[in-house]
Image 1 (cartoon, one colour):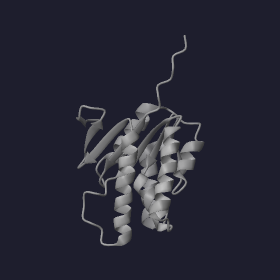
Image 2 (cartoon, rainbow, N blue to C red):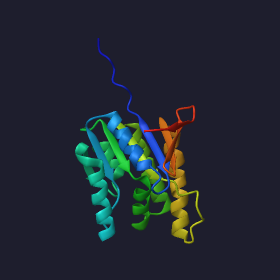
Image 3 (cartoon, helix red, strand yellow):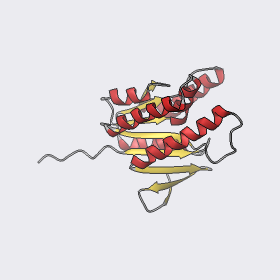
Length: 186
């Protein structure tokens, strides 16, 4: 008798800086498979970022293959065939990279549509970590406001198709989906 493989899960984890969202993303990835890929969207733009990237790489240990992909996220997800689970950290840096490169709102929305299509065709579990940017002050610049708005739209679109949703704040994580709402403890 052939036992069908479980459907690949899409998990979206949002929260503020230092909220515990990346820690939860790592825990989810460890629980979902042994062949893990970490897609890092950060760029080594200065010494502080290089140090931060090195620290994050050391924290996650040797249990992940790592792909640094600041822009071609959809393509990287679509091309992967070697992993049980892919952890993307983070969606907001990917969006920021596109905008800083000069992408228009329409360009970003098109890239997001391509990402959603890649997620719909996923062959492995995907965990996406993202920063919640809509809870703070209204950004001072037009680019900052555009980033906030596009991030909010991206969160809504991915959340609409995600199997699991989590919100991290102050080191506490709430599972929003599947119901019922629940405090997550590690």
